[in-house]
Image 1 (cartoon, helix red, strand yellow):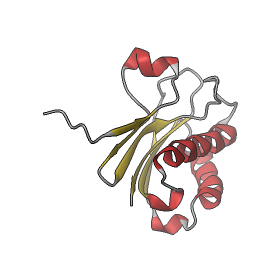
Image 2 (cartoon, helix red, strand yellow):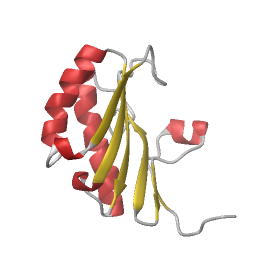
Image 3 (cartoon, one colour):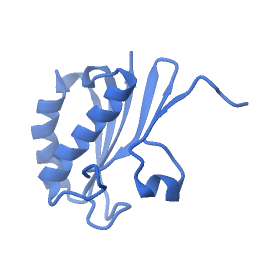
Image 4 (cartoon, helix red, strand yellow):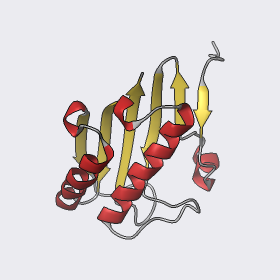
Length: 130
């Protein structure tokens, strides 16, 4: 059965059409964001873990804004990184800047050997609830 109450948000990146998905879905009072990357508006990845982590959180903010949500509405994040030590340190830094209180977010960080786009070092998916 088709749910016509869903709202969608996207960046219109080429890989969205190629892979077949949207960046964010709002269903009821919950927003689910697809794994976000550290890319600019042209789809170009930033260099290095720190810069990718920072841009990833900026992209999360943009998508949440489109639904009228904020970082304070996030209840869970799942982070995938290709280098655990660099990723953990970058999350500590940018998580503290992004979240009003980072200790109120359920967070998992997982080390992986590679991610979808060559050069990609981080991907973060979130769930937000109002």
